[in-house]
Image (cartoon, rainbow, N blue to C red):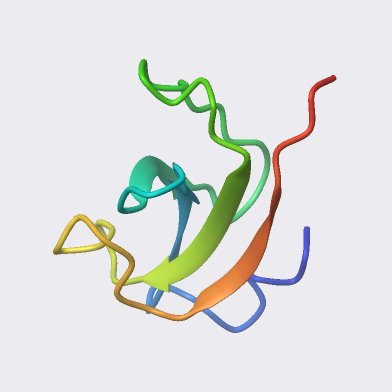
Length: 79
């Protein structure tokens, strides 16, 4: 764990975003503060090469877009 849960308590939740080229970010869901999170990859995002994690209020972003700081971002790698 990248220590994103340390000190956050119930104030912020980690939300994962797909960053499709030329389009607004799309939420992939909230990440668990502990353990493993399993999320589905939505249709229409097959070509996405970048992901990001933002800190959001409980329940996730109220706007459907990142509202809190982006604390991680990176490239999608094929396994």
